[in-house]
Image 1 (cartoon, rainbow, N blue to C red):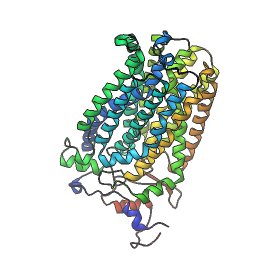
Image 2 (tube, rainbow, N blue to C red; image 1 turned 120 degrees about the vertical axis):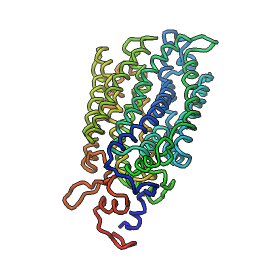
Image 3 (cartoon, rainbow, N blue to C red; image 1 turned 120 degrees about the horizontal axis):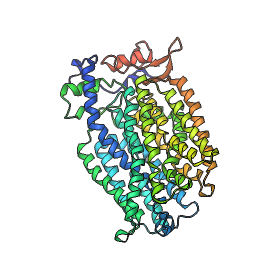
Image 4 (cartoon, rainbow, N blue to C red; image 1 turned 90 degrees about the vertical axis):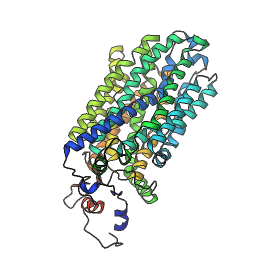
Length: 500
């Protein structure tokens, strides 16, 4: 039994100056505001994620950098034999997982610009320090510190977008944001190729130059983020007062908001107790294994095709470019059709086919095509995350649903490295078959969440009305959150304090 008084108290306040004069039917105004938001927000989050991904997976590039001169390679210099490289990859995710959710709460407390800036400057400094490592133990230490520094960046950005965009707009923005992964993968290969020519300069091996030159930009951009990344629509100086009111009201009463209190224990308990919290987390975990397998082992898989040195680095570029096109295309179509589940299932099937080919085909051309396919995992992940953010309301639930789900999923970063032991090269049968199975299970569970919440992009309760139809939370109807909650929950008005 749930108290009606409790239910209505969970809706965030819409008490923003000028709200009463806002006409949500003014589509020209909405398009103008969204365009302004895109221009002010998307470039920043794309650059920050590009640098984040470069610094997180550069160990994969370092592993194959200058492998045509083994004495200069990180594997030889740090004695990364056996499972040592896999352990170094996995160890990053231990503090990363533990701090993901607390980081989302701190982002709301300190403001997005301050917290994201802190994350960037921290990881940039630690990446630069990696160049000074001379032992395997030192490498493990900096990997632990790097995981601690980077924790919360991705779920923080996912939550940050919820402060600015409606549910049906998020997948496209997430795709543009996540396309930075593809750009980073492509740019990382080109950059690693160029840096390989610095091998021996100033007495430093090529892999040491890699960490230095990829860490410095993170520090510089992190400082700029502090001053120039906008925090909330309510504080955007580049919007007029009327535009600020429109930007807030168009999100509706269920979006996380600047005005939400930092933490609501009752909402947190309810969110974690919901079985779907764990269903979504399990789905993301299964997909995260694919993300990490590609991120850390793409250069290794290319090398297993018979390519070395500069060629091996350059051949990591086309799969990332192909992935960027597929990811953005799938997410744009998902937002345009306001549909999520079919897009997730289709993308999972496409990527799973890539792992199937890697598991059974030996021809290098077919295996390279399969590598291009598995690079597209985010084509499934982003519509999935956008769907999940529309099943919760308010800052506490959104922070927990995104941060908690992503934290649990990132344990895939601990398991994925051990699915691809070096002795199984070049087929890596265990890893490829395992992730193929993971993606198959993801597709099947998506069918279940499709039934429970529908595949629409708007806010959903997961409940059903008297006719068995899914309840839809209309995010734009009315200015009174209590009245909107009345309609959305399908509940007749009750006397305050009465149980329902």
